[in-house]
Amino acid sequence: MLKYVLLFVGIVFWLYCLTVLKRAKNGAFYFLVGSTGLFIGLLLMSKPYGIWLFATAMTWAVGLVGQTTGFFSTFYLAHVIQVVNHHHLSLFMIDYECSGLIESAAFLGLIAFYPIYSRQHRVILAVLGLIWLFVANIVRLSLVAIMIHFFGDRVFYLAHAILGRLLFYSLAIILYYLVFTKGQLVNRLFKKLG
Image (cartoon, rainbow, N blue to C red; front, side, top):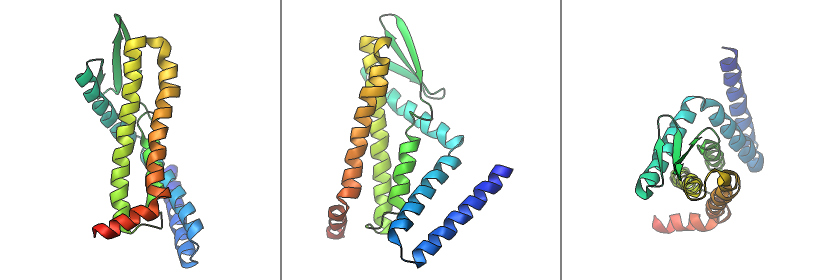
């Protein structure tokens, strides 16, 4: 009960800070406080159901790649990826870190308070960005499973902690570059389209 009261008080304080910063026309701190608060709030509210939903969806989607290639299979309700390599079974779980929830919450926090876009454009970019991150995570986890299929358990650390993350975060950086760095160009494109 105490944690819900503290969460409620934190949300009210966050909203109050946002109104003060908005009235003061302090755009930089409004963006900083708003995006950080939304990120933390999304993470706090995601336990346990958001984590379960993201992990289930991710395992199911990676399972489609496994069915297509025949290199691995998944048990999406258990969040498990099963890889067989030379009659050796490897299982790994999709958990909080692998689900993409943290990266999705960070992106939503940033795009929700990014001042260059209109509200409608932020919603469109949020949906497209979440899809991009979801697909990037599918590619990352599929790469890990395929590498384990061909090279065995000994490459798990290399595949998961190094190559998989490099691939995922490279794709995330491309998204951030297109949405935030080239924001003015994207905004002009939206104006041309109507």
